[in-house]
Image (cartoon, rainbow, N blue to C red; front, side):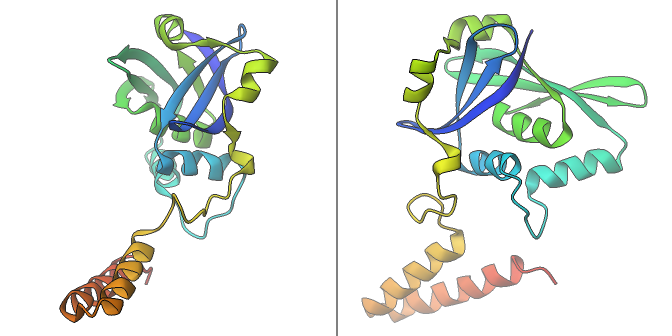
Length: 193
């Protein structure tokens, strides 16, 4: 296994990508991840304070509560373009492994200060050699992105309200009433009491 660190979080032409840089040589592993996972990683890296715990914060809190420690994650396989990872946990002196997506594993590893490893075979198959020239061409750094850009991060509530406005504008009042009710339900289930 190759010990790696999170080198960059990028916006590339295929979406968000995380670059895991080897601590042993100039190789790096780019992994395309979803917008939600990219945002969770960016929030942690940029030390953004959130009023309530996000999913990965909740998972870390649960591990702490259960006195279970995430010691490392291992990105161990690549099959048909899909990466596979394991969480390696320690509880009561026992080591446990749990299958998880690499993006979730990385977001959790950062919060738990756990080591990140990549199998040699995965790095051989999908890794790239990092140089100053190609690191600039990989994409736009997440530090330069607006995490609340309307084009790619509308909340479900924003989308519902947009649909409601459109329905009223088009005089589809029955649809508008349904959307209004859906907005009310959404607000009730997503507001802390």
